[in-house]
Length: 146
Image (tube, rainbow, N blue to C red):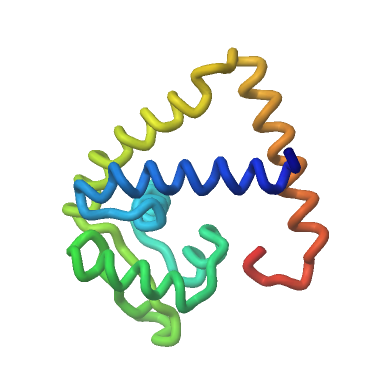
């Protein structure tokens, strides 16, 4: 099987399974990733532009994700007081709580994902996937969000 097709099938299956289980707590896989990233940001906040770069999505896509998270009360959007052109996003207490709940599910998915491998095989797979990612990214340097 071709490498690209196999990677797509793995990604699609992971996303489908994650979305299914996260649906029970009102999140999507993409929303979960935003919340986890915010947990690790200084002060649990960052700019919308930083989220776009980190998640490698267009501004309109990230604005939609953040808007839905705001509607659920998991994040709060606001403008930077020093530069009103910059939109910032902050994790709320409710967002921290839902992130803890969703993180447990994602950790279980990670365990299942690598359950057929030993530690050395996991390390080697990550190394090889980093090579694949870097190769793809370097092949299209003109893409801002790549």
